[in-house]
Image 1 (cartoon, rainbow, N blue to C red):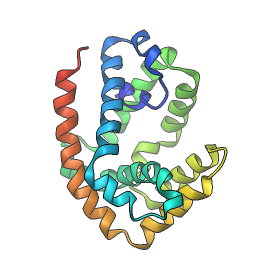
Image 2 (image 1 turned 60 degrees about the vertical axis):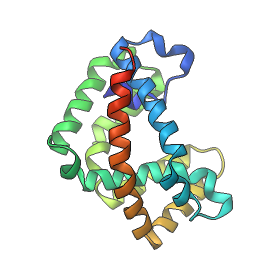
Image 3 (image 1 turned 60 degrees about the horizontal axis):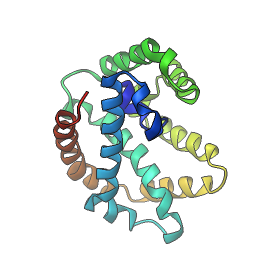
Image 4 (image 1 turned 180 degrees about the vertical axis):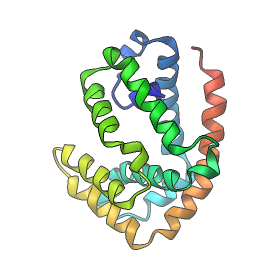
Length: 181
């Protein structure tokens, strides 16, 4: 689980420094990102955004889909969301010493503020988008505009998630079995 999150913090030339299981999950994260970016549902949803915002739409879609997953968690997982979150946070604590500093800071904040467990709350999801927007040196307003666009007409995004996520889960499971580690 730590590796799945580390994909946003690790570069390809450093992945082999990690435990093989974590390295496998980092690679899986990258494959999931590529699958997502190329998926027809995602490409069609991105077309709903203003042309100047489309390059940022993927970030907001990712966060919004995390929100939708948290809300629909029991449909996709037998483990409770709080139980899953607790396991992720224990993993961060266990592997903290091996994480890049940026990942340590993010993991500490994620754990202390229960980011994963709170994603089902619309306000927490908005806060997450705002946090990412402030980290962008420019164009943070584009992220906020993308979120406003989703919130104005959420139905296409809800339907897109319902179509996309089962395919993503099947892809990830198949890929996990194919990656050494």
